[in-house]
Length: 514
Image 1 (tube, rainbow, N blue to C red):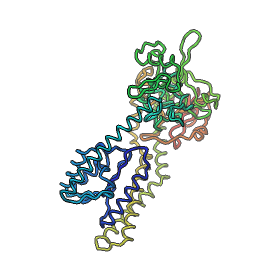
Image 2: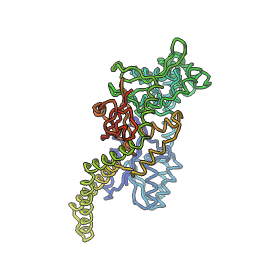
Image 3: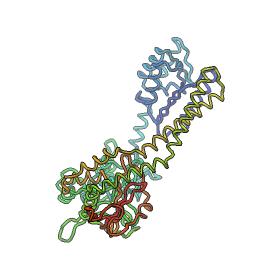
Image 4: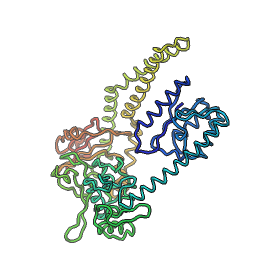
């Protein structure tokens, strides 16, 4: 087998490829067959805590190979003691290590030379670390970038911090929202819905704000390993804003923050603008009298791309909760929903390609079985091997596609589904936990217009289909009361304020007046 490693993210990916190529050439010279390739990328050799290295050592104990090929001894490790112990461990397992650039004979003199080289490797590693630290300290005295960058900054041509305007605007927005009383989870949800990523390109988490909200870089303070320079970095925030946020985070005595902290925007992540389809997020404002008011704001309006009016938080949350409770607690509506759900799932399965894929999988497995019989009979050629690899790849692909398709077609037992719905009866509609349970259990999305709501109920467990806005927009009402659900008064059924109730690919779409 081959082991390759490079230490720094500054090195190129080709470092691994070159090492592997040189090791393959060495294997050809020794007429060795190369099995697995173990590679650790951008990981220091000063520690054995390397995933691929640990896997290699475990496989050595299982007797999976007889030789380890590496470019140089320093690829195996730069800590002399650990490198020597690893070398002994491999020897005890009957594994010989061979290096491309270094030739150590299998005798006392060769082992002595190897130990000396390991000592040299550790000396080089320690000297390099000292040089790097010295260089970083010199950089720090000049307020230059050392290590990773903070959100809002990039490395300028002169090596110093430079503001990224679009990221700086997000930093200011986050600080201002904390001052306005936003909870971290609501800020996180809003940023993720808008497609804004962290500095490393990930989605925001609650913990993403721990350092960001306490980072003095944003007021121009440069800090590194004991060196602190006021004004060493271009500031993104004014000191008053930064200090106000520190007060909120440390004392929790800010009355505005405390008042806002009690507010919870239950529809965040589920509420969308009916005009443009963009998410609506919670905001708050203060009137001249000092009273605070809470709204949902369209992100499109924030970007001056939509003219949707703000929606009062209390009004729309109550409308949604009332509508959902009326729908799910009415016996006849539940009957209609279950019947329609079963018919829909039957139709979806009939239209699905899963049946054809299952047939193709059975044929592939049969072909693999026949090919195995031929191999057992001694019929082994290059064509046989290629065909087996092709069939195994096809089987793996079909298995994955069938699992995905079945997940999308996951169907509950009707009695189980009815029970899961009816367990929400006889609960206090004013209880906040009950309201959140209703929203999280039944609602996939809500599209709000000036005169109506389009509520998309969850299709079922594992429902993760994206909802094309254009498709939902095309679902329109059919009058002031529902024409699909039985609502005739002389049959004793309750009249529901529902315009239409339609089952489609994305779920159950309910349109109600608003």
